[in-house]
Length: 571
Image 1 (cartoon, rainbow, N blue to C red):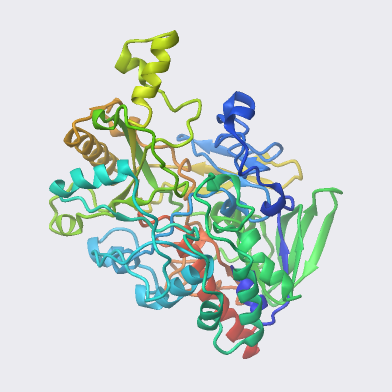
Image 2 (cartoon, rainbow, N blue to C red):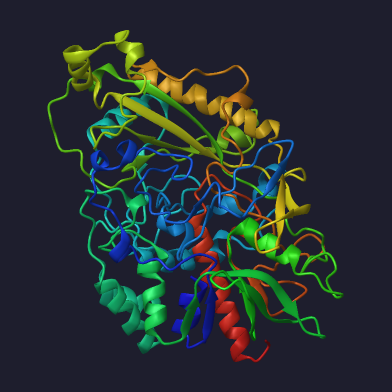
């Protein structure tokens, strides 16, 4: 996003990408069948999200790139390819609300952001308009709406979603259209490009041409495989093509950043990277350095960029680089719903994500102190009669007692589509015991010191997980269903591992006081004026809203600040 905004303004940008080049238009297996894949397309340690997942290089384990954990296991997903995680993410695009930017003012925990929702609202509008997000404005508490003409229409709910909504209403749980970065219809390129760049004819043309190259979703294939018709949002199909077309962007792939250098005045002078194809170090000079390698990778680069002026790592005078890392709190429960058995064959096509979801609804109860945890969660749920995989009938034996042959086939037909899964995605409160640092001895294959992770869930997160699972069980039972997931007495046994949701943020948080933060509100280093960090590292808190949309909106605001500073010759 930073490269896109800068190049539209005429700024020359060199992008260093640690992974290989990737073109979803030519490489995606979006129409391949699981039946034709090894293990019927199921996940493996090397391809945990399935054989056809768009992550062509990287994952939980990256050969030659180790990391360590202490006490509690941390799972670190790294995507070594152009576009990074935007190639396989779930496309859930939820705005943070006014409460989310000032959480400490609300409950006394964590820290407040140095900006308000109003500061970012216009950038949310621009980001949604650019990437294409479907959804609706429901006017719910701390669930902000978009300006008129920004959102695309949401797809119609499917049968299992309508049934869930029906049974959640008496429970007081809202079920509303989800917001996903998928084109439910083609973008109005002329109108949107004028909205995004009213005073920049060249940027309007480049953005309009890019939007016109995108098609509306076929509602047929999994987004996680990548999208050759550009219906979903991926950086390589939405942000990078217009930036490249401007002539202002140069991309160097297989460029593993080793260190950001500073000059005698303490300003960023450039970056040394390892050319992974030759193994040689290469130095590139720059007027401004923007670090956006994903939160923990960015912290690693800053910590490894030591000099006499910055002996503890670049921009780390506060000692907070690598500190206050957060991930989304996650837990799930599956259930069997008899009302969904033996349904007639019907079309359940739609987006590969959810059409409806449940935003957090108990803000007032929390404010009144009637809950034993401080922050909320939203609920993602799925089911239906979509293309089955090898795990589609997991748990069937508990309903049938075990069947074989023709009886097994009949059972599969009967129960197909009658299972629902509910997943909570909640807010973690930052704490001093959740952080990353440089491992004293471990290095990657290029000799770059690796990270070591530390982690602790607080009672707030554990109590939140208990509430999640009790809520999910209550929904399933209200539908006349059977809870299929064992719910342990100890929520520590149910909570997802740190890093497992792949929403880690923090590690170079922004703030209003240089003593208590690494960056100012524009993602600019307090100590190094020409250094910006524009990924999730700057997050002060980790709301229950998935972070990608906010990362991009904050990055756009930061890029505008950078452009203004360049124009004033402040950098």
